[in-house]
Amino acid sequence: MPEAAPASDERKRLIRRIHAEARSRGMDTDARRDLQRSATGKVSCADMTVDELRSVIRAMGTPRDRLPQGPGAGKLRALWISAWHLGVVRDRTDAGLAAWLRRQTGLETAAWTDPAGLARAIEALKLWLAREAGVDWSPSARIDRHGRTHEHDNPRARVMEAQWRILARLGAVESDSGAALSACAAQHAEPGRAGSHLALDDRQADALIRHLGARIRAAKDGDA
View 1 (cartoon, one colour):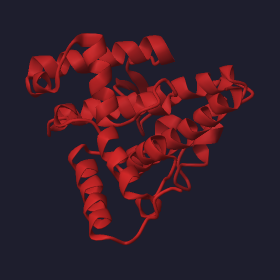
View 2 (cartoon, helix red, strand yellow):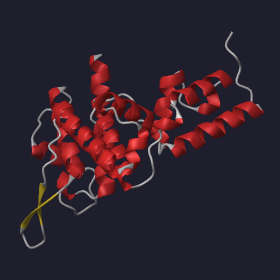
View 3 (cartoon, one colour):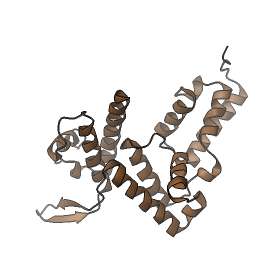
């Protein structure tokens, strides 16, 4: 018989630790729940036994898997989460990123506090996403209110474009055209804004990336 899940002091302590460990790794609620599901088959800590809660803590990895604080580490983490939304990784956590970096670059977490090591890690991940997911990191065109065209870095737009091409290859959308992506983007734009993924602000772009990521994972799971 499986162990019951009483409201014990030990369970409360373990749940608090899981939440604290998640925060220290920069994991949002979705990432934490994904890890919990992967480790135990259950989404909520409230439904877990003491042994299952300990399994979640083990699955979070060791302290060496924690990313340092700072904008560089934030960029590295954002790229890794993009890899999850592109459907090329299954573990979106810092521990998953740390394991990938050790395999691909030999870098340990301590190296990420060094600007050169962090830059190397970021570049390695961008190159890998270009190969594995077809992300084109070149600058995007932007038209200002005077009708002039400017080039600027827009990594969110490039991730969305790659996601749309992946969905087309999976047969989840009918066309991989920019017009088709723009029609989808219009559903996430503020009223009155141009219906293009290039016109979305960061919040709207992140929402569309999450939406497309869920569609990619559902399509891939359906093929499994």
